[in-house]
Amino acid sequence: AKGEKADRPGRPGAAHQRAGAEEEARGGALTVGAARAGALLERQLTLARTRAHTAALEALGSSRFHAVADTVALLASDAPLDEANAARPAGQVLPPLAELANRRLAEAVEALPLLRAGHPYNAEALVHGLAATSAADAPPASERQDAPWHQVRHLLRLRRYALEVLDQVWQQPDGAGGPGGSGPGGSGP
Image (cartoon, rainbow, N blue to C red; front, top):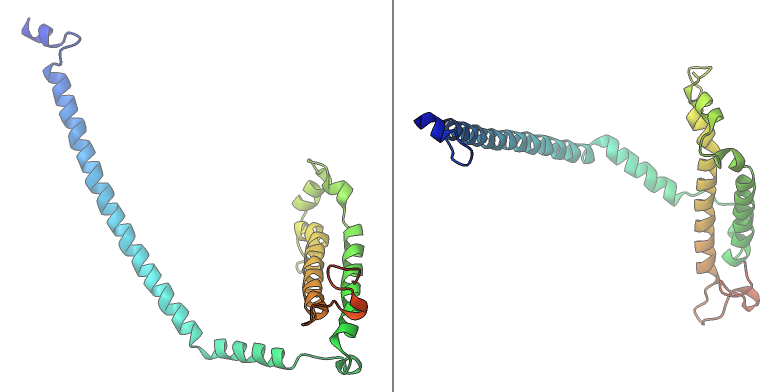
């Protein structure tokens, strides 16, 4: 009768108390285990970070890095210049070059496969994407499909740089625009 009384609803019995104590003991063990795992992971990450830092410092001090840095510096100082345009003012030389960049961008945008790319399900792209390449050195089908988009992205960047340079060329210290009084805000290129 005493056991029946303890197992009635609303009154916890000895079995329920034992189960609660076991759960509490397991929860405590999980917490200690999680703390140990976290500490181990932290030690491993610290060691990996230290090794990576050491490797980066060694690479920066290597002769290969200095050779690359020297080559980049030489390329920047020995930029190939067009002898015919070297003596002319930048205001005369740069606008035709910027116009060329603008024209190349417009041609590349016209060549984009916009009709094919405008469909949410492009079965042709899926077929080409799953197809194996014909030669070992041929680019994958996905790269061939993305090539026109990457070309436009590249030409857009070149055009933006050209416009930035033109903006600097057209700005005059006295506040007037470029040749003929037209600047970036006026009717100039």
